[in-house]
Length: 93
Image 1 (spheres, rainbow, N blue to C red):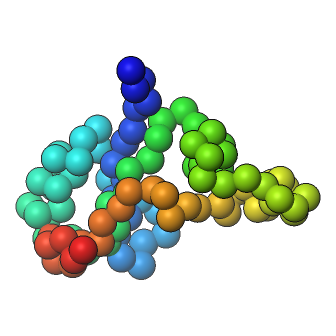
Image 2 (cartoon, helix red, strand yellow):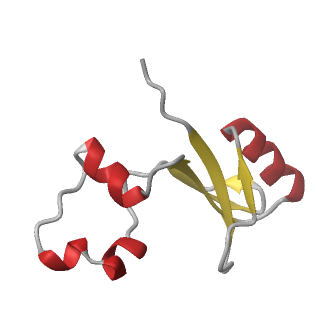
């Protein structure tokens, strides 16, 4: 049984921080369409960093010492995060 919890994070185009966080993809899409916003909608796991999540899932394994440093970890992102690009409220995938 899968007990993992996720949130959906919307970051507007050229925004430095997220614009909205949702408990479901459906709620996120409704908001995106309603406001006709542009940006990225991404699915993030709760209570675990993306760095640790990718290691746990077997998607990434640090191979060098620099890949275990705070600077590396704080900037870490993954192509394994489910995401969709929206332009004027319409999915561009």
